[in-house]
Image 1 (tube, rainbow, N blue to C red):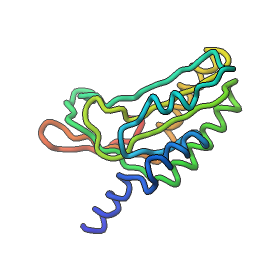
Image 2 (cartoon, rainbow, N blue to C red):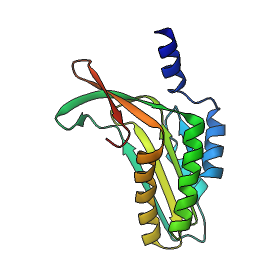
Image 3 (cartoon, rainbow, N blue to C red):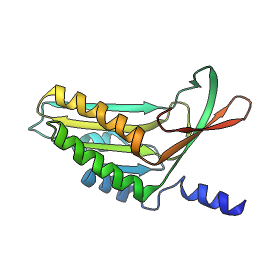
Image 4 (cartoon, one colour):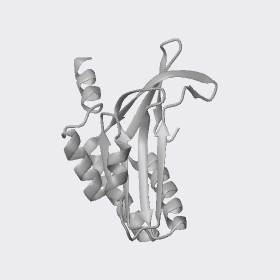
Length: 165
């Protein structure tokens, strides 16, 4: 049991400092974070005078999933693999869409209702590529990044879900 708790504990927090995580996100386009996401910091990083469009998405923890009332949830992730896969997703987005840059950060650890779990921001010269890339990045992160969530319900029961559920 101790080994399992240790494995889960390691996947609930990042091994880098917060500033290192933001620098990785700024440079490579993706990082995991185990504290509140600073949307203003990310938005200012994407500031670019050649871009007429900035699109972002904030995914927040909601108080229900289907017919079940959700009290809170915990995200677990594998940081190094997530960063590598996230970098590849951002690189692919730059090839597929006419965007200048994109950044995405996904939270891990314990989150409460209303907390931002994922933030995706995209800048481009025009709005359509930014909108299209933002949605594609979000959908691809949810499908491909090694992050799982455990939802906790009113009766203190919990359920493991894939990140896209």
